[in-house]
Length: 554
Image 1: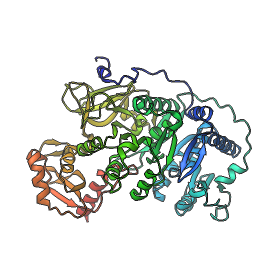
Image 2: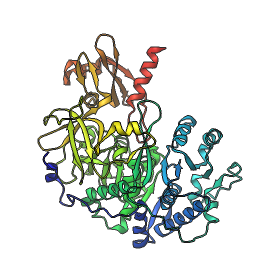
Image 3: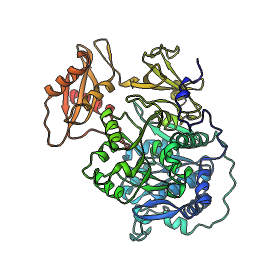
Image 4: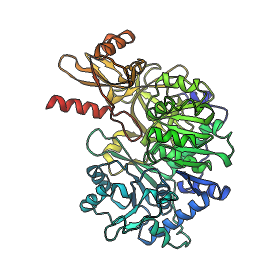
């Protein structure tokens, strides 16, 4: 195999290889705390905490957890939205050599039960609004330490909650009280190597429990440095004193952990913390800041922001430095719109198993619409035969993307069979079907498991999605394969129509038939008010497939 031919397209500032420091992931908090101690580390609805204060609170929380018996290797569940308490708990856990388990605050009791039991969570950080889920959870799963906060405890003017007010169970701990009663003693010197686990990140399972990707300190350090260097041609132009990052992506998702939280520390940037995405409220937050250095997002967020009635008056082209999209393909129309507004824009691909990074379009160099771009430094990729998974396919032919990189997880938690199935000789099988073009850029054709086989034809739903988005009256759309007696599977489109517009099934099918081979066009269209989405705004095809199957079964 030719060695990394895509590197000829790297921007001038991106190194071909990086010398990663052998430091633990939490070391990055020391950089801004020493260099810019009085600069705000966080801005939470206008309330600021400096980097120096943040580090002090992290050390106090680490000392408190240590006194409660937390030790290296213990799993600490973080069940919090974006708020200062998440950051404090995250870095405190890592300081002790404990392993952070990210838990979506929207999970149900059953979901939490499976994940906390599977990972053996011995300490859980949570908040007042979800206690109706946590109380029954703790009846069924033995979690020795529960730490509760009220999200507004870190907003000036809201007052400080008390354990009595939150009606905490006997033996549970109050976040702010733990800090108040902790002594600032020197932290234990815990030996942490790059191979030690730092984070368990759950990723969608097709059946049963989601799989927990175990990411090491080395993975987090490599990912932080790679994404920082990749974007530094733009973000580095803002002096560190003025740098900030829009923390709208949830920290409990690996994309938010790396590209917002870790990036923010490494780049001495103030993190503008947004615990929920409510578009009108969010546009109000945007209006409060003259400039945003870096704004990582997902396509649904970008779509909502740039098409909002206030977008023009806020002059987003002047306000937003670098817009970064991940978590799903950005429709070409949306890319054109951001560029017409004068916003710098980057798009890439990654997975929980690759510490959220892997392949991206250069920011200054050639950027190809519809392509995920080229691999990051120190990363090898191959495109292999979908059936055998062994031999490389010819250029231009679809095959499964496999990847080898310092970004690749250690293993799946407690799941040797899945680990062996997806990791082979240091290569991770991604399940994504891609095509490599003559310039060594990669385009995702689809997920292996999303591919529709209708009448013997392979249909990639993503291609149909792209066409649906080109219809001027379509706000949101997704295609899935559903069982069909005659063709094996057939194509069904789920469509959300723009407000005030009307569309019929015939309109959609006719529009697709003009732009696609007849066998690819949807045969059935279902109109919806909205589509099910994940925490970071990815449309969940699997849920729609299951709903459709349940309807037929009933």
